[in-house]
Image 1 (cartoon, rainbow, N blue to C red):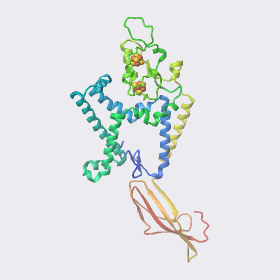
Image 2: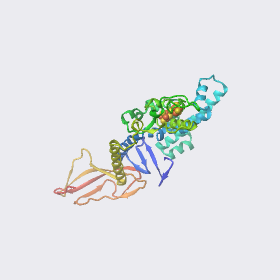
Image 3: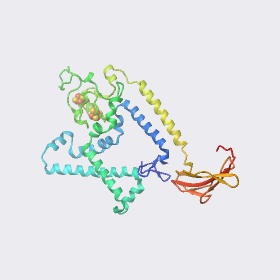
Image 4: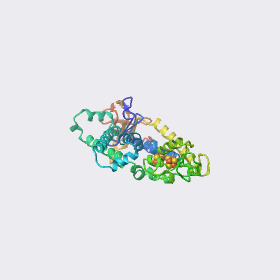
Length: 385
Ligand code: SF4
Ligand code: SF4
């Protein structure tokens, strides 16, 4: 998103140090913070609503899992082999083969972490600034460069060593799963009614056990190292790797697939189909309302905001022609990328404005402009403006 530009503006920029935010190529200022607050609440409700489908967000949206399972883990498989081979390699002596395999893996991990850190920075400082760091002498961008190096090491540490601990221990969303789940929540479930009792598969022998042949393939592929057959666990990130592994096993022995599948507890224990319960309906209603409010706020957002206040501690002055005047401060925020002139006038009352400086002033683009002006009115005016 930070690389896409619409009308010269990045699609997304979250420049916290400068308090400048661009969403959908629209500039937002700290004065628009209420839109951000509503956007945050909408996002939280969205995530909570999606929890009815289990940790779908964790398994398929969260960058931690997406990078881990779609980028870093496949590289590990490619270089070090299956989980069994990896375990053997980890426990083995430091041979030449182990050194180059580990070295290559960590070199690739570090390089990808560097790219991720660059992209992360593009969200914060924008691509133009990022390209400046790349093109210009590094000594001119020491602060940004140290940030880039810090985040490269941070991402490298997360993806190479910390890994699932982020999902199981650090992430607050993961810790909150327990309170957001109920018996209608769709999640990765083992069909214990069909699978138990477990027993080895014997070709041509009549099967008296359940469908689980205890091959442990589902445990081996699990990134968080859990056994889903022990029931729903907080560590499950909903990546569905165990579903694929078990379905492959089921196909190879001519059993029906779906022993591990997406299902709610009620679906497994009472064979009851998934239904949209009251809680889900309430969240959906709330989410729709928030999205409408946000849409209206964004569509009706003004591109110029003006705040006028009397200068602190300034008392009114009596003028000789039976008029009074006072000094005011005008703060005009131009949120657009264009500079344009403004003129001053009093409307509805018999007043006069004397801007200190000149009357025709140009508002600079993307800037907060401050002006001072004297407002004078007849003393007995009953204007309420
Ligand atoms: S492999 Fe299965 S149990 Fe393990 S995290 Fe993925 S979905 Fe959950
Ligand atoms: S992969 Fe399927 S059959 Fe094998 S142990 Fe897991 S649940 Fe049982």
